[in-house]
Length: 609
Ligand code: FES
Image (cartoon, rainbow, N blue to C red; front, side):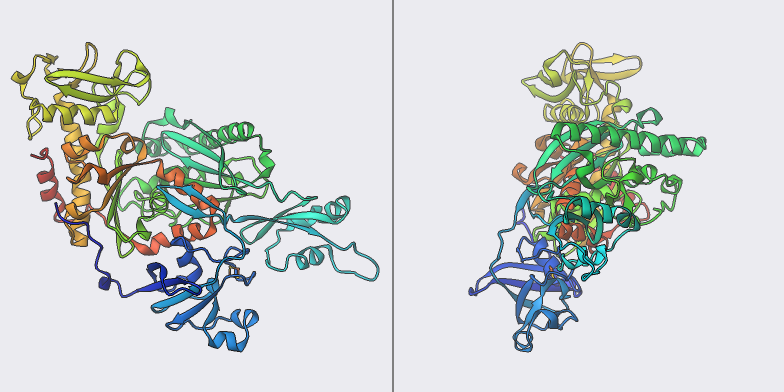
């Protein structure tokens, strides 16, 4: 087995190397390579180096002081307001105003306040820096002598932020200040003042992170004070009657003028239903949810916002916008705080959409020096390969093998589904969800069944049944089948469907390896995500060739990475900036136009020897 590699750095002249030192120590606490132009503050935050801040990187709190001890960091217009000339000469800069243009060594002073952090994503340590902030202020009452306007008085009391103020705030401001005896809490979402509340409400702020999946929708109510989830709920997407996958939903909108509005309504109902459930379970007033973050594939996001998805379904597969304009929770049909913004993720392409960008954030692939491979296994499988030096992403159409409806005895992963198969001495052992009699086969059961049959010599490497190898082979109609139980069987066609799916995915990661000039054996970690991938057995995935042949400890289940990415974005504005930077950092590779695709695909159809 080849050694695990780091990608060579010299391929990327647009990147700079940053060394962070703890004040008073020579030892680098962290080294990072980031795109030139990234601020020191963002680079530090993405790499887990904590720098003081109360404004979240907006350049107003002047707390993010660092000292550049080697390399040149230009003085920003704000720096002279925070430092003396002597300090500027000595290299002191505000980290959030300092764009990196060359390699730097940066001394980071100890924190004045201990930052709160939360574990999220795939083992990510996220420093809490929510966009939603609250400021409790006690104002002087206005008098004939002191005739500041109500708004001036409020803003003057919050000298570390300079928010934008929507008109609606002014409608209630005068009454609120006087009723509250001039003791109020300002609520900020990023740089917008979204409310002024009576009294001190500063210990209550929440957000909801949604994963708007084609099949399942998950909501997590987050306490932004602690970073901890207060409630998590999931339900099936109410758009199901329009078809199981994105293509059937898009087709519905093409056949019927009313369908888009109805699909949008169903998405809104689903999100609102979950909102009510998580708020009830977490005992939180929906009006105290000040932000929502929505991760989902591009089709789901466009439909939820009432945007025609048709161009996503046909060449050249165009997204309406890579970054959505500002939206509100109400635009997603979610009744929380009336001015709560809705945050979405950018899209690399029609089929490497916001859900994958959220997944890239959750896995931290673009932050890690090691070469890692992330596969979201599904009808359309997204594949990301790379490290902090270079990252590539692609989408591989895997066909319907993982959709229950296309497999003879296929079913959703619910009670009665065979999710695990073992063949020991010719005997079949089944693991069935819910410990009931087997009713069908779900995606992980299918992969396991085929892997075990190959291992037992009952399926050959070309994918053909070896009919005399077991008495469990029989025929149903014209077709050869392998009986897993009295009622559930695997057909020869099912095996073929799986071969196409895994060949498509394997072609995807092989091509990305080629483009990065590495051998698959050099990959340090494979992350399997998505509703199918998370449940696959690593051994079976290797045996059928869905993932590279690596020690099993290098293959890990990544869970619902899109939902985790949504949570991370709700907890930290700097992480959110990292997600936005994915558009510049990750290169999208289109497989369909590649001359080498077909040959490689044919090679990948066979099961590994
Ligand atoms: S000024 Fe607040 S983080 Fe830089």
